[in-house]
Image (cartoon, rainbow over all chains, first blue to last red; front, side, top):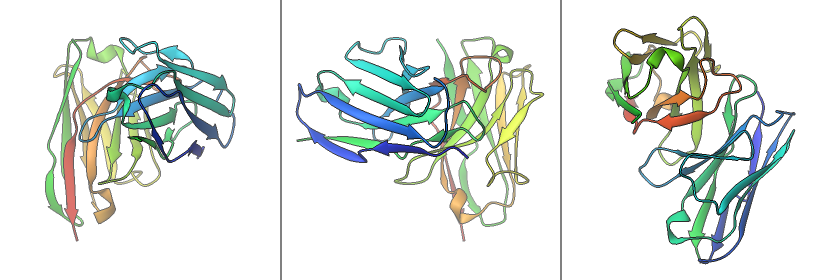
Length: 107
Length: 122
């Protein structure tokens, strides 16, 4: 199975900060990667698909980049509602796998 | 509006069975592949199984093969997950998710239900 390694596993940041989360795949997955945001007790919410396309209704401060094995999710200016856990997922090869998650906390 | 509502979770003894359901509305059900994804308490997300829009193609994670069966009923707009031989490590919230295409490979999950909790007691 393809392993997705997310880093960091957690980070502390302030409102207005620029935040970058990385996701590295153990083998190439082209651009078949999505990013999700999950708040406590809630279902995941799609942010980015196909590595760099913005999901419907997702604020433009979120962006994604990368292809092959290395991907990044960037939040250009962190807002209070962005404190959550973020997951990457590959949908190129079965079994579809998720990264371990990155918890973004308030500094 | 796309809606996915899971049901069927509960407490079951190790070795027992449960059938989860996911009622879909707001879209043409047979036009989209569907998946089940689970999340153990305090842990990350784990993809479990996927099924094509027609129901003819299914995939499972290794731990689910031979124990879980995914299926769908387009007349009822409902997705199912039959879970047999349940183990303590199957304890999790189970989410159903719609894919963006009729087949699951190379199509992301764009809508998710709120989940149903399965607890397996040993």
